Image 1 (cartoon, rainbow, N blue to C red):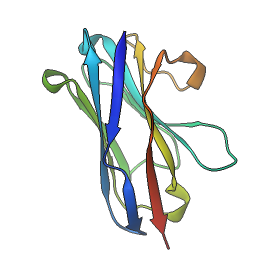
Image 2: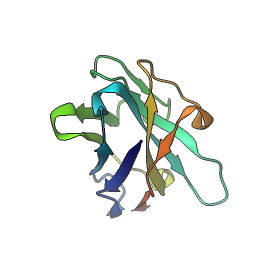
Image 3: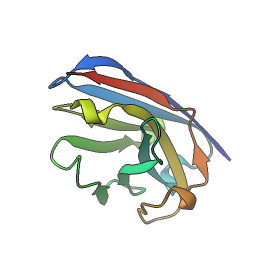
Length: 124
């Protein structure tokens, strides 16, 4: 079992940056693939970025490549999502998710654990 707590969301202007954090409470954080999903109003949850257990493999959705960067600090049981050059279309609730696996996958149904979500709003 692992509990995920996100932080770092907020209201920013287009072009600004935000850094989301996800702290995991439980055992063996380093055994989990960590990812971020987002959900805009009226839309399904979509994969944003994922990172494998030791950080040597990352995966990004096409619409965030080059702007977002996922990372993790296993010593602090924390994953991060650095979001640069934010656009109004990045506005959504962002969820931190975990999967007990060595690979990064992009399907929401694949993930075992979800945080409560943090709101990111980008104004134009």
